Image 1 (cartoon, rainbow, N blue to C red):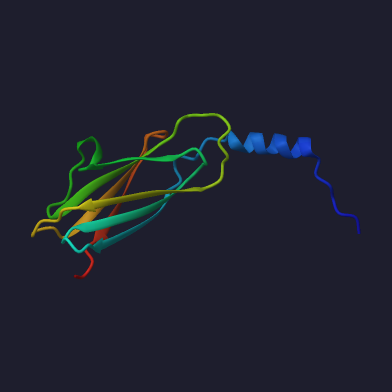
Image 2 (cartoon, rainbow, N blue to C red):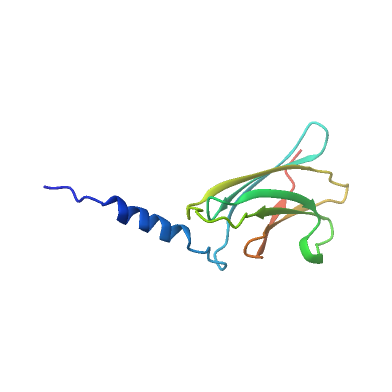
Length: 134
């Protein structure tokens, strides 16, 4: 039985067409967050975000909620910002983007709200995390 052959030109054209597909803004981003207490009494947040294409980068981490959103009492808010250079040639395959930061909880802190801001699409998603046991 003969194996089907893929012509290089057809493969390259398909790859280029797929790489220019914009991400679906309705799709929720796959996120994994881990909170733990460090030896100084702070909270360490490690986050893994599965970005929709290969050009996304970990931008910056800022305290608080984006755009003046209200935060529930007793919760710390942190915003993770993903950036995208807008370059051509990005491959439409998921790419892991990592964030790591430390938070200073107060005595009244009951949990952490993590906001993910995507600068390219303008979307903001959030996850509610409970404090780990000490």
